[in-house]
Amino acid sequence: MAPPLVLITGGGRGIGAACALLAGRRGYTVCINYLRDADAAMAVAGAIEQAGGSAMAIQADVAREAEVLRMFAEIDARFGRLDALVNNAAILGKQMRVDQMDVARIERILATNVTGSFLCAREAVRRMSTAHGGNGGAIVNISSRAAVLGSAGEYVDYAASKAAVDALTIGLSKEVAAEGIRVNGVRPGLIRTEMHASGGEPGRVERLQGSVPMGRGGLAEEVAEAVLWLLSAQASYTTGSFIDVSGGR
Image 1: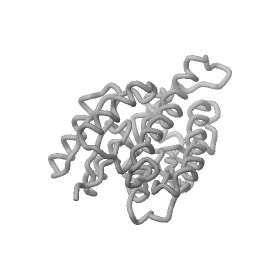
Image 2 (image 1 turned 90 degrees about the horizontal axis):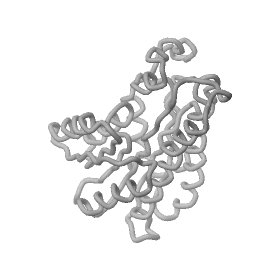
Image 3 (image 1 turned 60 degrees about the vertical axis):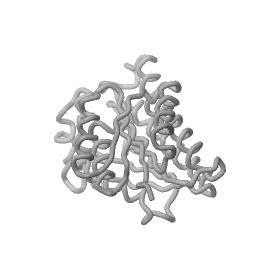
Protein backbone atom coordinates (compact mmCIF):
# COMPACT_ATOMS: atom_id res chain seq x y z
CA MET A 1 0.00 0.00 0.00
CA ALA A 2 1.36 3.41 -1.00
CA PRO A 3 2.17 5.86 1.80
CA PRO A 4 -0.38 8.64 2.37
CA LEU A 5 0.12 11.81 0.35
CA VAL A 6 -0.05 15.25 2.00
CA LEU A 7 0.07 18.66 0.34
CA ILE A 8 1.44 21.43 2.56
CA THR A 9 1.04 24.95 1.20
CA GLY A 10 3.75 27.42 2.12
CA GLY A 11 5.88 24.44 3.07
CA GLY A 12 9.31 25.88 2.41
CA ARG A 13 9.78 27.77 5.66
CA GLY A 14 8.54 28.22 9.21
CA ILE A 15 5.57 26.20 10.37
CA GLY A 16 5.01 24.74 6.91
CA ALA A 17 8.55 23.42 6.71
CA ALA A 18 8.30 21.95 10.22
CA CYS A 19 5.07 20.20 9.21
CA ALA A 20 6.66 18.87 6.03
CA LEU A 21 9.69 17.48 7.83
CA LEU A 22 7.58 15.82 10.53
CA ALA A 23 5.16 14.42 7.95
CA GLY A 24 8.11 12.90 6.12
CA ARG A 25 9.31 11.25 9.32
CA ARG A 26 5.79 9.95 9.96
CA GLY A 27 5.70 8.15 6.63
CA TYR A 28 3.87 10.59 4.37
CA THR A 29 4.83 11.40 0.83
CA VAL A 30 5.05 15.19 1.03
CA CYS A 31 4.18 17.76 -1.63
CA ILE A 32 5.72 21.08 -0.61
CA ASN A 33 4.07 24.10 -2.18
CA TYR A 34 5.99 27.35 -2.35
CA LEU A 35 5.49 30.79 -3.88
CA ARG A 36 8.97 32.20 -4.63
CA ASP A 37 11.76 30.53 -2.66
CA ALA A 38 12.46 27.40 -4.68
CA ASP A 39 15.76 26.82 -2.90
CA ALA A 40 14.10 26.68 0.53
CA ALA A 41 11.38 24.31 -0.66
CA MET A 42 13.90 22.08 -2.40
CA ALA A 43 16.02 22.01 0.75
CA VAL A 44 13.05 20.76 2.78
CA ALA A 45 12.24 18.15 0.13
CA GLY A 46 15.89 17.11 0.05
CA ALA A 47 16.01 16.72 3.83
CA ILE A 48 12.96 14.46 3.72
CA GLU A 49 14.48 12.31 0.99
CA GLN A 50 17.86 12.10 2.73
CA ALA A 51 16.03 10.71 5.75
CA GLY A 52 14.52 7.98 3.57
CA GLY A 53 11.21 9.65 2.75
CA SER A 54 9.64 10.91 -0.45
CA ALA A 55 8.93 14.54 -1.29
CA MET A 56 8.50 16.99 -4.14
CA ALA A 57 8.41 20.78 -4.29
CA ILE A 58 5.79 22.50 -6.43
CA GLN A 59 5.46 26.21 -7.17
CA ALA A 60 2.07 27.93 -7.16
CA ASP A 61 0.51 31.14 -5.89
CA VAL A 62 -2.48 29.89 -3.92
CA ALA A 63 -4.20 33.26 -4.38
CA ARG A 64 -4.54 32.54 -8.12
CA GLU A 65 -7.09 29.94 -9.15
CA ALA A 66 -5.29 28.98 -12.35
CA GLU A 67 -2.11 28.23 -10.42
CA VAL A 68 -3.97 26.20 -7.79
CA LEU A 69 -5.59 24.16 -10.55
CA ARG A 70 -2.20 23.58 -12.18
CA MET A 71 -0.69 22.49 -8.87
CA PHE A 72 -3.41 19.95 -8.21
CA ALA A 73 -3.23 18.73 -11.81
CA GLU A 74 0.49 18.07 -11.34
CA ILE A 75 -0.24 16.13 -8.16
CA ASP A 76 -2.93 14.14 -10.01
CA ALA A 77 -0.55 13.33 -12.84
CA ARG A 78 2.25 12.16 -10.57
CA PHE A 79 0.36 10.47 -7.74
CA GLY A 80 -3.26 10.09 -8.79
CA ARG A 81 -4.57 10.79 -5.31
CA LEU A 82 -4.51 13.08 -2.27
CA ASP A 83 -4.95 12.01 1.33
CA ALA A 84 -4.33 15.17 3.35
CA LEU A 85 -4.00 18.94 3.02
CA VAL A 86 -2.35 21.43 5.35
CA ASN A 87 -3.55 24.92 4.42
CA ASN A 88 -0.57 26.83 5.76
CA ALA A 89 0.35 29.47 3.14
CA ALA A 90 -0.24 32.96 4.53
CA ILE A 91 1.17 36.46 4.39
CA LEU A 92 0.99 39.58 6.50
CA GLY A 93 1.86 43.22 5.95
CA LYS A 94 3.86 45.74 7.93
CA GLN A 95 2.50 46.61 11.34
CA MET A 96 -0.05 49.42 11.15
CA ARG A 97 -3.46 50.52 12.33
CA VAL A 98 -6.58 49.91 10.26
CA ASP A 99 -6.89 53.64 9.52
CA GLN A 100 -3.52 53.47 7.75
CA MET A 101 -4.29 50.48 5.50
CA ASP A 102 -4.93 50.88 1.80
CA VAL A 103 -7.23 48.61 -0.15
CA ALA A 104 -4.37 46.95 -2.05
CA ARG A 105 -2.88 45.65 1.18
CA ILE A 106 -6.21 44.37 2.48
CA GLU A 107 -7.02 42.62 -0.78
CA ARG A 108 -3.54 41.06 -0.95
CA ILE A 109 -3.85 39.62 2.58
CA LEU A 110 -7.34 38.26 1.98
CA ALA A 111 -6.46 36.81 -1.44
CA THR A 112 -3.69 34.61 -0.07
CA ASN A 113 -4.96 33.82 3.40
CA VAL A 114 -8.68 33.40 2.70
CA THR A 115 -9.19 32.80 -1.02
CA GLY A 116 -6.10 30.59 -1.16
CA SER A 117 -7.34 28.45 1.71
CA PHE A 118 -10.77 28.11 0.09
CA LEU A 119 -9.34 27.16 -3.31
CA CYS A 120 -7.00 24.52 -1.92
CA ALA A 121 -9.70 23.11 0.35
CA ARG A 122 -12.12 22.97 -2.58
CA GLU A 123 -9.69 21.05 -4.76
CA ALA A 124 -8.78 18.70 -1.90
CA VAL A 125 -12.45 17.92 -1.25
CA ARG A 126 -13.00 17.20 -4.94
CA ARG A 127 -10.31 14.53 -4.69
CA MET A 128 -10.85 13.12 -1.19
CA SER A 129 -14.62 13.16 -0.70
CA THR A 130 -16.39 9.83 -1.02
CA ALA A 131 -19.15 11.78 -2.80
CA HIS A 132 -16.61 12.44 -5.56
CA GLY A 133 -15.26 8.89 -5.61
CA GLY A 134 -12.43 9.54 -3.17
CA ASN A 135 -11.28 7.60 -0.14
CA GLY A 136 -11.69 10.32 2.48
CA GLY A 137 -8.90 12.28 4.11
CA ALA A 138 -8.05 15.12 6.44
CA ILE A 139 -7.58 18.88 6.16
CA VAL A 140 -5.83 21.03 8.73
CA ASN A 141 -6.13 24.79 8.34
CA ILE A 142 -3.41 26.84 10.00
CA SER A 143 -5.15 29.75 11.68
CA SER A 144 -3.72 31.98 14.40
CA ARG A 145 -4.49 33.15 17.90
CA ALA A 146 -4.73 36.53 16.16
CA ALA A 147 -8.16 35.39 14.96
CA VAL A 148 -9.30 35.54 18.59
CA LEU A 149 -7.11 38.36 19.93
CA GLY A 150 -7.50 40.76 16.98
CA SER A 151 -3.88 42.03 16.70
CA ALA A 152 -4.88 45.63 17.38
CA GLY A 153 -2.33 48.19 16.19
CA GLU A 154 -0.45 45.53 14.23
CA TYR A 155 -2.27 43.22 11.84
CA VAL A 156 -6.05 43.47 12.17
CA ASP A 157 -6.37 42.50 8.50
CA TYR A 158 -4.31 39.36 9.10
CA ALA A 159 -6.37 38.57 12.21
CA ALA A 160 -9.59 39.01 10.24
CA SER A 161 -8.28 36.71 7.51
CA LYS A 162 -7.54 34.02 10.08
CA ALA A 163 -11.00 34.43 11.63
CA ALA A 164 -12.35 33.71 8.14
CA VAL A 165 -10.17 30.57 8.03
CA ASP A 166 -11.75 29.51 11.33
CA ALA A 167 -15.22 29.93 9.82
CA LEU A 168 -14.11 27.90 6.79
CA THR A 169 -12.90 25.17 9.13
CA ILE A 170 -16.19 24.97 11.02
CA GLY A 171 -18.46 25.15 8.00
CA LEU A 172 -16.49 22.81 5.76
CA SER A 173 -16.12 20.26 8.53
CA LYS A 174 -19.91 19.97 8.70
CA GLU A 175 -20.28 19.77 4.93
CA VAL A 176 -17.89 16.87 4.45
CA ALA A 177 -18.02 14.95 7.74
CA ALA A 178 -20.24 12.28 6.20
CA GLU A 179 -17.96 12.07 3.16
CA GLY A 180 -14.90 10.74 4.97
CA ILE A 181 -13.09 14.06 5.41
CA ARG A 182 -12.14 15.60 8.75
CA VAL A 183 -11.43 19.33 8.84
CA ASN A 184 -9.69 20.92 11.82
CA GLY A 185 -7.67 23.99 12.67
CA VAL A 186 -4.52 24.86 14.58
CA ARG A 187 -4.10 28.34 16.05
CA PRO A 188 -0.42 29.09 16.69
CA GLY A 189 0.44 31.91 19.07
CA LEU A 190 3.81 33.66 19.28
CA ILE A 191 5.98 31.28 17.29
CA ARG A 192 9.62 31.86 16.39
CA THR A 193 9.45 32.07 12.58
CA GLU A 194 10.54 34.47 9.85
CA MET A 195 7.01 35.86 9.53
CA HIS A 196 7.62 38.45 12.25
CA ALA A 197 10.44 39.96 10.21
CA SER A 198 8.15 40.27 7.20
CA GLY A 199 5.83 42.30 9.42
CA GLY A 200 8.68 44.65 10.24
CA GLU A 201 9.60 43.46 13.75
CA PRO A 202 12.01 40.51 13.86
CA GLY A 203 12.11 40.72 17.67
CA ARG A 204 8.35 40.64 18.18
CA VAL A 205 8.42 37.33 20.07
CA GLU A 206 10.95 38.72 22.56
CA ARG A 207 8.85 41.85 23.06
CA LEU A 208 5.61 40.01 23.71
CA GLN A 209 6.65 36.72 25.30
CA GLY A 210 6.13 38.21 28.76
CA SER A 211 2.41 38.19 27.98
CA VAL A 212 2.50 34.43 27.42
CA PRO A 213 1.59 32.47 30.57
CA MET A 214 4.34 29.96 29.78
CA GLY A 215 6.81 32.83 29.48
CA ARG A 216 8.31 32.02 26.08
CA GLY A 217 7.72 31.95 22.38
CA GLY A 218 6.85 28.66 20.73
CA LEU A 219 8.66 26.62 18.12
CA ALA A 220 7.41 25.69 14.67
CA GLU A 221 8.06 22.05 15.57
CA GLU A 222 5.59 22.32 18.45
CA VAL A 223 2.91 23.49 16.05
CA ALA A 224 3.76 20.68 13.64
CA GLU A 225 3.12 18.08 16.34
CA ALA A 226 -0.47 19.33 16.70
CA VAL A 227 -0.97 19.40 12.94
CA LEU A 228 0.28 15.84 12.45
CA TRP A 229 -1.91 14.57 15.29
CA LEU A 230 -4.98 16.07 13.65
CA LEU A 231 -4.03 14.44 10.35
CA SER A 232 -3.49 11.07 12.00
CA ALA A 233 -5.80 8.16 12.73
CA GLN A 234 -5.46 9.02 16.42
CA ALA A 235 -7.74 12.01 15.70
CA SER A 236 -10.33 9.85 13.92
CA TYR A 237 -13.30 11.29 15.87
CA THR A 238 -12.11 14.90 15.78
CA THR A 239 -13.49 17.35 13.24
CA GLY A 240 -14.49 20.99 13.34
CA SER A 241 -12.10 21.47 16.24
CA PHE A 242 -9.12 23.69 17.03
CA ILE A 243 -5.89 23.25 18.91
CA ASP A 244 -4.37 26.45 20.28
CA VAL A 245 -0.58 26.13 20.34
CA SER A 246 0.04 29.38 22.14
CA GLY A 247 1.52 28.81 25.58
CA GLY A 248 -1.79 29.87 27.11
CA ARG A 249 -1.90 33.31 25.46
